[in-house]
Amino acid sequence: MRRLLVAGNWKMNASADMAEQLLAGLRAALPAECDVAVFPPFPYLSAARQQLSGTEVVVGAQNVASEESGAFTGEVSAAMLADIGCGMALVGHSERRQLYGETDYQVLAKVRQLLSHGLTAVVCVGETLEQRKAVKEESVVAEQLSLLISELSDADWERIIVAYEPVWAIGTGETASPEQAQAMHAFIRSELAKVSRDTAEKTRILYGGSVKAANAAELFSQPDIDGGLVGGASLDATEFAGICRA
Ligand code: PGA
Image (cartoon, rainbow, N blue to C red):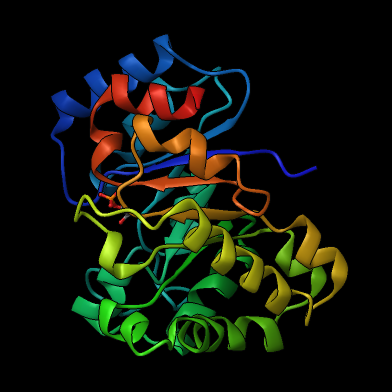
């Protein structure tokens, strides 16, 4: 059985005060029925780890360097994230792909870095509105996953979570219907079967794109949706707790 995971991606939001309040709210309303992870901006990661100590909440980063160490000004390595107790990092978020030109090769290199330092990679994939209109959503997502599928082993996949985030649903208030999301999640699972049946069955596939407390239950009840990657709604402790309860 795959345990549901609700993950909050704060993006470039919050302040030290706001982070503290948000995490206090989260601590007070921690659900027993699902796994929870939060992805604050880099400067707040250590404080988040401290504030959440004694809970099962995983603290993760929103990005990681594709290199091990060295002259890469401005980058943060997987070793550093491990050092401060991060358990996960997002990789290949559509904002990174679109705004910073992150490629599938970089995504693979970042995943490798995370795996070699014992972190879990949450790999984001998803099509744009144009690609969906052209009925290319499956080929786009298959392409985004193909290097990971061909290069990584079953053992590697034990530390990878996929997040399907249709770009047209991110921050737009528009959500994929439960049927649209389920169809894509089932497709992703069939692609993962190219690694092995075991990997296809065990890998958690999160849905992301305007998830809120009001639509989470219906999304999470789909057989291949194993939780959510939540942006905007993760900045509101009550709303985020509502999603966890769903
Ligand atoms: P959203 O963002 O929930 O605000 O749509 C999701 C994400 O980008 O991870």
